[in-house]
Length: 349
Image 1 (cartoon, rainbow, N blue to C red):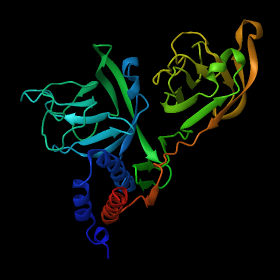
Image 2: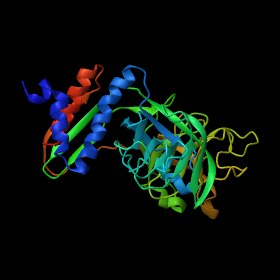
Image 3: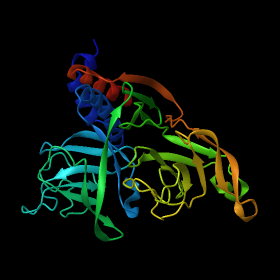
Image 4: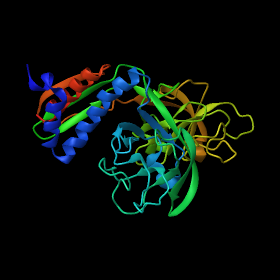
């Protein structure tokens, strides 16, 4: 019997120690996915999506944070998928001995061997903080103090717990030039199932710059509808129940203004229905549909058949892949350990 099946944790630990830091980071996502299956089976939350950040910290909005483990003090800590952004609890972020305990958003990974000043910088430097004596979990919602354009301002953030709608699985591909891990679980904010990526085509000549843009799911609005942002440009697709706040019909809109995740109507706050295009009476913006789009002074508002095609966001490994393994979510602790060990052995091949 292979060592990783007979003594999975011991074997996995020795293999992790021999890995580079980059490979350890990749494997950590695999481990998180395996642990997540067990946690979800017992009703324990393991991930969330953030909304409500100011424009200066727009990179935090819509990010998917996954629990990676517990700190030395026993609090959970989270990492954003695909980014070096972290949420963790620090009893004394400056390490002075008289600091205020708080949850923080930080660009630095917390050190699991430190009891205070978890990022080891000797100062309280982060994106945002939430002072709290509750260390067991971050607040579901609340007023955070956030650094916005070099000013500390209060922002109301919402942590939307996510839940798995299918069995969690993780694909690990090891190649001669790199390793790729893909979280294959279908996850979405509670009460919402939406495509993760949409590619736009069919815009009129006046708005030809929209064609080919890819819109990525950022989170959900206050009414529970998904909203999207284009890659590399400030274009948004969202549902507005009343775009001017005075009783207008509900519609999907293509806009240049970021929607509020907290407002119930007039999501861009301009008190008018001002946007590039709209789609009335639709459950989802995805697919082909006839939108009403502004196509310049000559054509004015015109009926245009736009297509928002769902895009598969698939990671592929480097040129040569010599092994692939799919790990189903584990329910028992022993099967989680085996899953973790198997993932590490495959990733490190």
